[in-house]
Length: 142
Length: 142
DNA sequence: TCGCCAGTGTTACTAAATAACGTATCGGAA
DNA sequence: TTCCGATACGTTATTTAGTAACACTGGCGA
Ligand SMILES: [Zn+2]
Ligand SMILES: [Zn+2]
Ligand SMILES: [Zn+2]
Ligand SMILES: [Zn+2]
Image 1 (cartoon, each protein chain N blue to C red):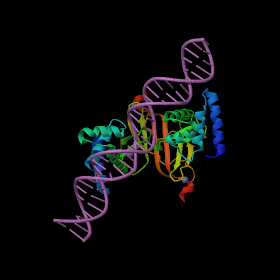
Image 2: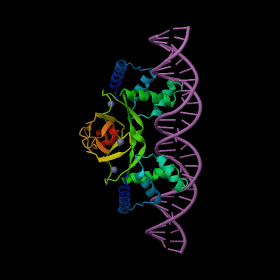
Image 3: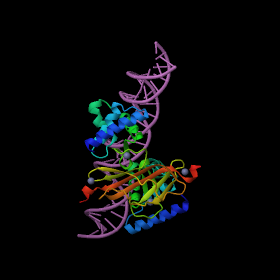
Image 4: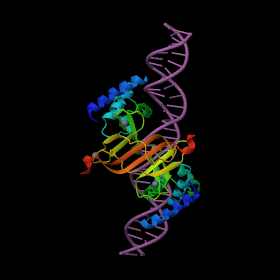
């Protein structure tokens, strides 16, 4: 992700926290920076490693807590099929994220789903949708 | 899943293996039976437990191998967001499965996706899609 | 008969995530 | 100001998920 996108997302995060009376603590901010700056989806334990030289002795709960917080704010999405996380530069409240993940270069493009599937079972009320497409991006198709 | 659906799926499995020159060995068959008969998505280690009284000393690779095999045949799908597995009674070659999972009762309904999303990034070629909707089924909405 | 090979057994390990509890910090109520 | 409760973070330990690597077997074809 580009530096400008990244810093915009950080500003958005600050604003969002203000609005909601949440605190973007140093750890949370640093994790968000790392996720946004990462080249492709990032594993929790890779974040942990990246965090450790600077934060001393971060343990799994540290990073998972930060990730949970950021996901709650919609600033980070989990890629379920990869057990990995991506930053989000869109502003969308909950759900609707549709991910296109290139298996070659790892880039992730996010779209806001044409959310409601037409073929849902009758009476089924959707709370949360996981939509992840794996394949090859334009650059890697050639 | 009902017994009749289950036994139909087992017959389909036999046929499919014949066609492809694969072998539906006792272990594979037993795992398929268990997955089909399970109430909702089933965890690999729960299968392992269910397998152990009868199979003696099944270890993780045993069940994961069977699951991989069955997924290859399209008889089992993995629910990525749950790290769990569901049986498939449809006949579809690869992909296209769209799952509706009730968070209350655990039932899973499968539809064949209105496959190609209209809002894919230009030039993105999809190999595999993960589509999982979580919510409440008709029976559990009241 | 020999050698291959798919399937399974087995050991050991890596990876992913959470439980449970202790500690620090801050802001509001008394 | 002091005390209290809440939130965030530290820490230890454990659970859950998945795989690597190698050994063994039995069937089948040369
Ligand atoms: Zn997003
Ligand atoms: Zn690519
Ligand atoms: Zn299916
Ligand atoms: Zn239900």
